[in-house]
Length: 74
Image (cartoon, rainbow, N blue to C red):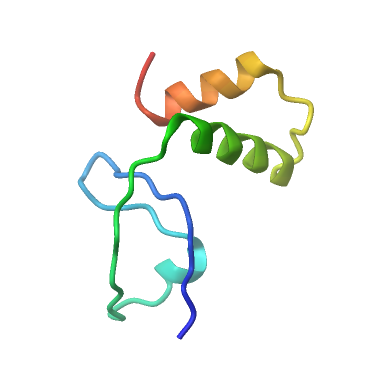
């Protein structure tokens, strides 16, 4: 058994967003543990996501905006 760690988001309809590979496993059951992101982890996640998506030149203001948007804060 292999554990997979990812950051998900509760969507408007109450469902949890999943990585594409996991989302394809329709009907398979998983044990789910929900841990809210701490501020420092959110910054790290946004930085890694930016790098992964090719936006390694993000400023601190850009990262802050991403964090606020991901939490529904305007």
